[in-house]
Image (cartoon, rainbow, N blue to C red):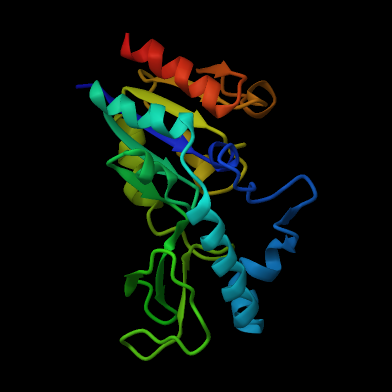
Length: 227
């Protein structure tokens, strides 16, 4: 069975109503990134950071997977599929994908502010100041903030090296280190890039460009691959 690795970004979730991480005005939900998504922000105003992610968690829980998510899940009928996502929502899982790796963390999880390996499933629950982990430290969102290491990046590199087919969806490939994953793709792999701005974003000529939104482009590609 051929192996497919899919790298997804904010564009696929945007079609389910979730705003992209950085809008055209440089803000995320009207907040400067450095005010809500850095270790410095957490240190300066943890209450504001918690409330920001409480709202993002609530928003994500109300979103539903779109046709692109379901199409990727349907690929598992014919291929071994691994989804590597930069998104922190759980729309891939709710659509039925069985192997999803979240590079930048997950809204439905929380962790110790002291020990990154002490992780809890919280689903839609809010996190408040004073909520402590078993180690006695404040619970924080299980999110990889700017300035923090991406612990799973080395784990996913072998997937890209061994894939027969690579599909990149809804990401500008501008956020490091996730953007560097395309450098590990085998020269023998078939590569596809689905994004409305595909021609502007992708300079790698090894990719077949599909300049369409995720719902339309993914369904067309999946139908083609399953044939």
